[in-house]
Every structure is written in structure tokens, then in C-alpha cells.
Length: 182
Image 1: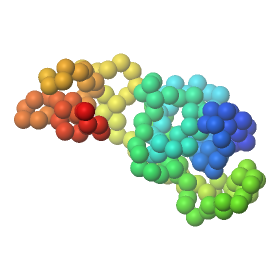
Image 2: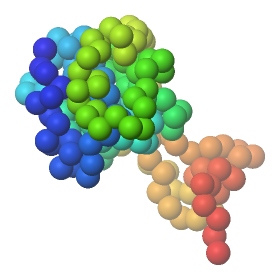
Image 3: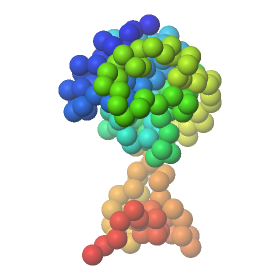
């Protein structure tokens, strides 16, 4: 298994600072790859990541794997949890790796690398074998379905529309927008 310390410089350069989230993220990602029998240097084309936070841990996933959101192999869920599920599309095996919440460095800890180095993975991570039921339109690749929202005229891909009174609308026009027009 690859040592997480090998990625510290890259994590610092990409994320902008070194923090517990980056260190734990590196460890989560390397553990997830290890559970699938993969290395960061392998061709990870058939790997999907399901990231449960939009914080530091997510940047560590990119630093180690190079997998990006735009290639449809990363899905984010803002559950506020330091956890990532790793799915091997070749055989459907999936593992969820999460950070246990019992250990936190105090604010006066100066050397986070030394602090986190004292703990083995088993002390700070939980690993679960899981099943990810993906629909065909959730897999990476070209869109399987396209519709045009009759209300706003914008295209909606891969079954993300919502039926409202028999009409297929985009989520925003169906009342699920994350924004308000001004």
C-alpha cells in the first residue's frame, strides 16, 4: 500500500494549505484504493468516487486519483461526512471508507503530520463493503437521454427531469432550484 506521506506536497500545492482534512483525505483515498486492490498509479478509468463532503477531503481524492467531476466518475453528496465510497465499475465491488470522529488534534498542535502519523488506519478509519445501485444513466459516458425543459428551454440530461402534471421539467422549473432569479 502506498504511504500517504508521499502525497503531502501535492496536497499542499493543490489545496493551498496542509490540514487534518487533507491528511485524513489522503488516508481515506489510499485505503479505499487498497481495499479494491488498486494503486494510485494504476489506470483508474473504471473507478467511481462518491464523496460525502465538499470540504478538504474532496481535494485529497483528486490529488491521489486524478479523477474529476467532469468525467462523471465523481459524485458529491453534501452529507457533511468525511467519507468516500469507491466503486470499481469492472466488477461492481464497492467500499465506503469514513473517518471515525473520536480523535481530533487540539488547536495548539503544530505538527499535524506527526500527530496523525501516530495512529494506524484501524484507529481512525471505518471500512464497509457496500452496494451501489446505479441506474444506466448514472454511469460515466455519453448522455443516454436528453430533454428540453418546456418552461426555460434548457437541456436536461440523463433523467434528471421531474414530472409535474404530466410535463417533464428541469429541477429549477419544478421548484427545486438552489438559486432565486433577481
